[in-house]
Length: 188
Image (tube, rainbow, N blue to C red; front, side, top):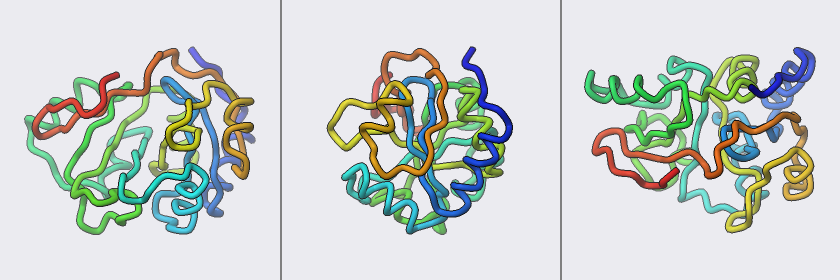
């Protein structure tokens, strides 16, 4: 199990997120880049750093499903059961987005990709921040993702903090499935 950074590091990371900064942190498979999803300037800075078009949308990770509630529409009991079978864990689901969810998060879509992470450090970061965070791989689009703190720092100059830790050991990023249809959009 990956070790957690000390409480000071988590609180510092949460403060940086609240102040509009970008933090790199380990996830289930790779290092991720995160920011406050409701801070448009932070999200656009992250997208520029990655050279990623806003139209593609982003993933939000959370420490528990209640953190995601403001960003998604209510789901049926069947869909909720599907989510409960995989969360917390390394499964990202596309869910219908609340219409108030900013386009800088959902891109050109009416849905949003979300995950309740079981990675201890990523979950602790969301808990310290008190809300979900953007989670996208630490790399420029089309380049290999970072798998260590050093790679994150080298591949993503301009980030404000790197939380060191080990990834969860997955060889590939988490699968992405459409929660309504079950369609696999990215295999794990």
